View 1 (cartoon, rainbow, N blue to C red):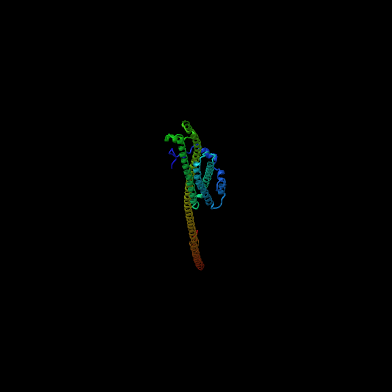
View 2: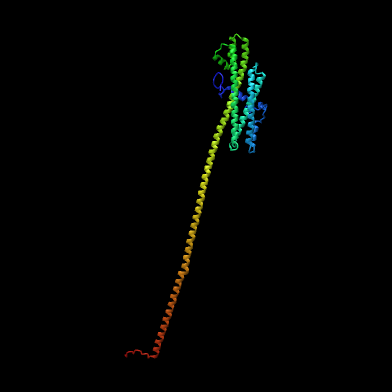
Length: 363
């Protein structure tokens, strides 16, 4: 892309003081100039509030559709800009008060206000977490690309107009100084002092009348170039802001995805640990029941043994003892009878016999 005599891009200067003034003077949310356009759009705060409170699942798609219509208006304005810029170059009256220049200023202001509004609306849409859903992401990406393409197209239109304006200024300088070198012409075209080089050329020129007319035209063109530079830098800043938002969004999305993966991983681990705990609890309960069963079985065996001992072994012992006692008693009874019988017999014999007492000795 050509940028005139200096051969470099004069608009890629983000710290340009002129840009700061032009950017802040109009305001990022300026809707006044845009309201005069053919496409009516609500204020940014209104749309932001609507999107925040919107419960319609198609809210983002509807917003993308509305942004699409705004980009259509931008593209239509760019076609009008080309024609109006050419009229200002062809117009003999190059003053800012000419009809062509007034139309160009109004159309440029409307288009820039529309760019600001659309850029902010795209930023709002992209900052919505729902913009990354499978349903919304294709449309959001499409309007983002369309708006960037429209910004690039406006930069090209302004760059071409700047080039044609510089060429016209170079021709006017050669009218004042036909013998000027290429370096002198370039210095005059790139002069930022408001036509000081042209003023010096008028003093040295023998064509005073035509030189003064050319000086007035050059001063008007120089003011137009300053405005073009401000708009070009602002467009570059808008483009950069959209890219910066994308980078920030990607970093945020990556962090969210990373946190989501960590949550899923923690949930999986938690489920595994819960499963292990459940299995462990089941095993523990099973072992408890087994131990309880063993204890009950042992107690039952002990009870059975005790009962067997009481009712069988001890009972048998009691029977044996009773039999022994009865036997002893029977033996004792028999022995007593025998003794009684023997005594009776002895008494009988005593009764039948004669009692022989021993004789006592005589003195």
